[in-house]
Image 1 (cartoon, rainbow, N blue to C red):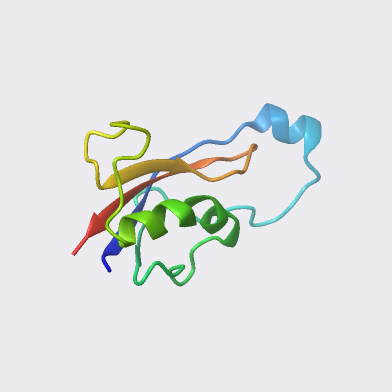
Image 2: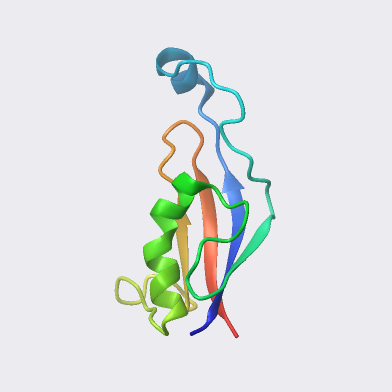
Length: 100
């Protein structure tokens, strides 16, 4: 089983949607641009967002088990995926890469 590196590549924030639809919350996202995590044995890395893990974990699992080439050639590196969390107000894009 391979390790999977997870890198925070982009963070968006849609203030107009937050103002219109979201109840105020503190500490909605603790991720930092450029932050990296290592998943070992397809397990959630320490301090990784639970909600984001729900979205990325199927891809981490596949990469950790030697899978890849998602969606027939979607990524230039077949052992990687670019996945965004499911927060519609402040989505975070993660680059997942199988590493040894």
